[in-house]
Image 1 (cartoon, one colour):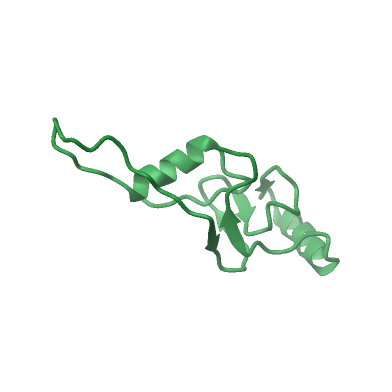
Image 2: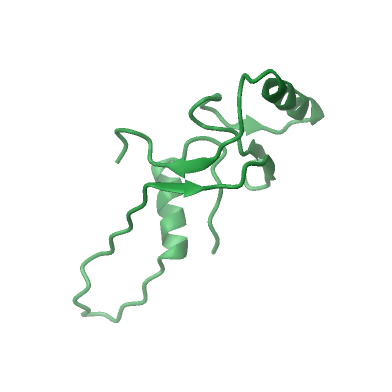
Length: 104
């Protein structure tokens, strides 16, 4: 498995899927391990746009300052709109991944 990028703010299912893909634990039955703690604050990401084949969306825009919904790729006009918005500074590229305030 590999980590999947989220075209919009990740849902709890997205987070669980990604944690499971990197923290696979092989414990024998009867093990005394009760759980795993995975803590992070911010993760630096490459500042670039990309196409995600799993969601057919354009990823890489700042989630905090752009539309909360995914940027679905239907045709080349979708990319022109995003580039125009970047040029006019209506949106910008994402620089980090972090937990949204108040989320669990």
